[in-house]
Length: 200
Figure 1 (cartoon, rainbow, N blue to C red):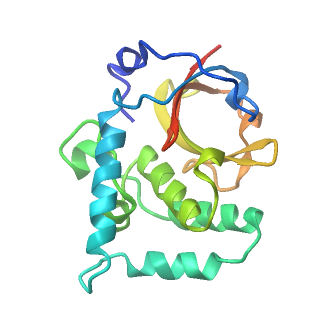
Figure 2 (cartoon, rainbow, N blue to C red):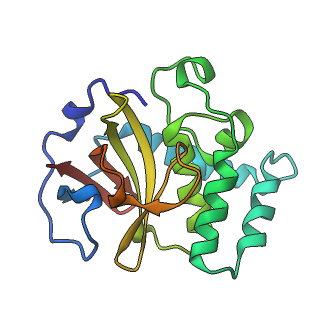
């Protein structure tokens, strides 16, 4: 995930009422509903809505996604997290510059299923799959972070199971408690309700 200019996006984050959820990776969080500073996220949402309309026709290339969701309906949340993480982690990792000709491109699940992708694309696809399974948006965040071991930008999905933030990561086969990973330094997290600036 490209990190250039990321801190510029974060300027102007406004504090908001404290969330009921525990902090991610032990960070201090500032919440804002203003997501206009995240055009890649907003562009992905727009394309996703357009893709959903297209998928109502026979030309949809992601019919298997709906079948996968149907298979998981009614399962307990722990099973859903495990299976969603496993299924999407099986996809091939491809850098955005090779896949899309851009340094940082946020793909929809439809695009990811067709062309694979990089870290934030795994997280986004898991997010929308779990949303389709009934997991509330408020219980999930796509988290952009710094992997301090590799000194690289990375993105993951965090899902709250009760009071426990659980990590769905394309670099980790199992679903694990997010706060058990000590080398991840969160920068920002986002969902359809807003975004959070993280500080330590």
